[in-house]
Length: 272
Image (cartoon, rainbow, N blue to C red; front, side, top):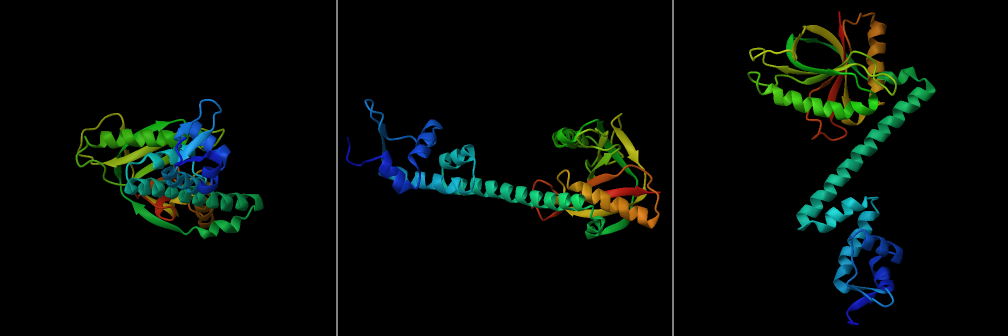
């Protein structure tokens, strides 16, 4: 056997990985031995494989899935590897921020803490009449996000045929409650140039005043976004203001590019 090869025991100690982990990574095709003895099954590794093994060990300490680890290890250059690592960590930070907001929401619900809703600043504004492309569907909470993504994609494509295209923030109207048991319906509206050709998927959203509160990306996820809806509803009731139509979410920022702490959405209630 070539003297430059290391036994699995030596390689495990020097790479900070257990022999069990090394066998797992071999089965996954992530880190293959340089040689396997056909008689006794002993594994042997090259010295230069230590760098890759140590990278895998460090990435796994981040609780990174093996598929993501494999993508980073297989990346053709350091810049690409660093980019993939950055993407993974950004997703983790967003997930942590979402969970933090969910804990806040659930704690408030468990304690029936109505005063916590005062953390949301509610304002009133005038909204002009808008011509909107629209798509509506009955959808429950589990199906909602996938449908929103697909429907917005279809509406954005359709908007290119309406004069100057999209002319204002996309908004999502909840004509009925959406949760595990109720399915709306939900309507997605995309403002467009009214001079463009009209069809059955276009309607006019009347001018109105609305009460709204602004929330960050981490607060948008269900069910924590319900706290914002509750806050605006409570404020409207306290002011004795009648609501004219269904509540909605107004997305005024690039949601995909936003950080968890960036403001991206207004939860709004149209007023009479």
